[in-house]
Image (cartoon, rainbow, N blue to C red):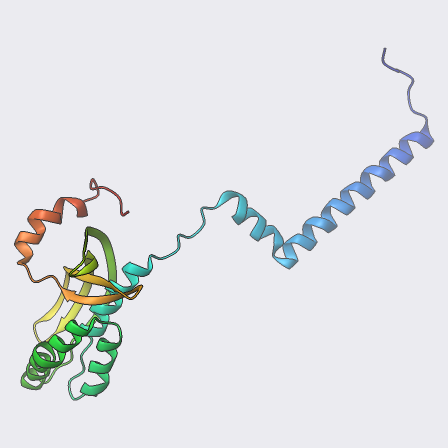
Length: 197
């Protein structure tokens, strides 16, 4: 049974004061949350998708491409070599030191231009292998923009990374023709391809 007795003037005034106080408290709390940034953090925690943590293996593939292909004409060759070797396997370091590094130096001296890369992005891991001889290895497709004596080109390559004593190291470009690699792995790089593991 409901109570239909009308409120008197005093009761209406008390109710209005309570409503005003509640509204003022709510506004003060909202303003406090807004000023401290807690309102934004709360909104992001509830409604926004968290930023995915970068894959450290992808970062190794990207770092290897960046370190190898950023080569300055008349730059500090020894510093460049030390940098690439610090993130590479011993075999890759020796190959760069004895073959690929001198080739980069010769091309740079001949053309008197730098080689630089930008927008380096590991697209996807396309293959994984484990053996007692070579250890745990992965092949990553890495896209980048390269600028050198030939001009500027948006391209991609397949690079190998190898786990050495629990740490992933750059193991250079896969020594197979790009056409063969595209035939094997190209369908995985399309939007319809499977997602990155």
